[in-house]
Image 1 (cartoon, rainbow, N blue to C red):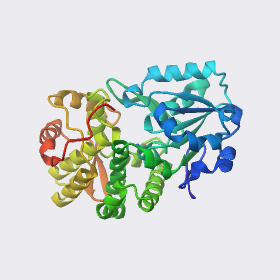
Image 2 (cartoon, helix red, strand yellow):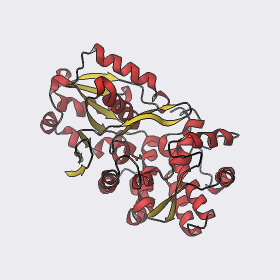
Image 3 (cartoon, rainbow, N blue to C red):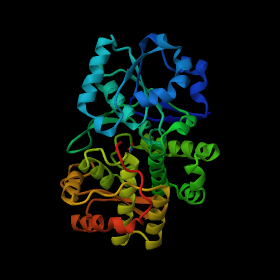
Image 4 (cartoon, rainbow, N blue to C red):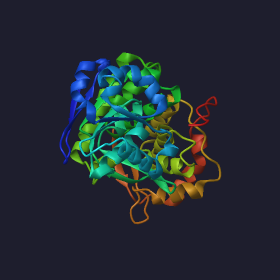
Length: 373
Ligand code: GLY
């Protein structure tokens, strides 16, 4: 079992990662605190896939109360938070409750925000079941919900007590969800791990097949990177901002399309290509490196097409983003594969031009990836 300790001002916590971890009922029964205090927060589709694994750990119906919520990005709202809090009140959850978030980024972010605010804070455990959640969102304590004006604009830093990740659960993820996580893996390569990037260039086909050996190498490597970054800068005053590579445009695309067109990783995929283009145009990144980023993103799979005629809305969403300061857009720009820097003086005109050219920069692949999410 891989064990990473994440440093946090509220108390360090372990991230445990092992194939088959969720079938280890006896271990989990001890790790998941007192059965009568457990509230499992999940979604109908995740719970259908994970129930057999989790049931042993939780000791059946008596081992936890189950609350299911809609896990689409469009449901990551204050309304869902209120509903969940009210369900907890009706279920009798007190200050000693432990919320166990079993699911992807939306379940983790909503359950995490509820854990931060319900009765002014209850214990939280993350059991991430998507690739995005395992390599990124379950680690680091960011919780929150979206507003129509922008992504994750209401939230709290609230670290969990424990993160339990089992790469075996990734086998049952819908293809699009799985690929969405791979874009975040590419991100780790660009921001600080050239060796991972080269590995992805060589072995992407294996990862796309969900080869166990490849996943068991990649997932803990990304987790360690995330733990290192957030351990040194929990509240994103400096180095943690690098994790936002691809997110300046990514978040804006999600908001400008009502959180219905892109999965998070897909929006980040477009955002990474755009950031590489901005860096190339600013003379920071060699054209060959920008091409490598574009090519790897493209190989992960077809991205939903960009919305037409919404440039003004996309730019407005970028300005509303937390990453913007004093009206200036902040971009995480690659200088080379494995190194990025933060820039705030990127002109809107350049961003607008690149937005217009983006569909030509990313070669067209067979249709796919679109539809209801
Ligand atoms: N997902 C970016 C961060 O946790 O900072």
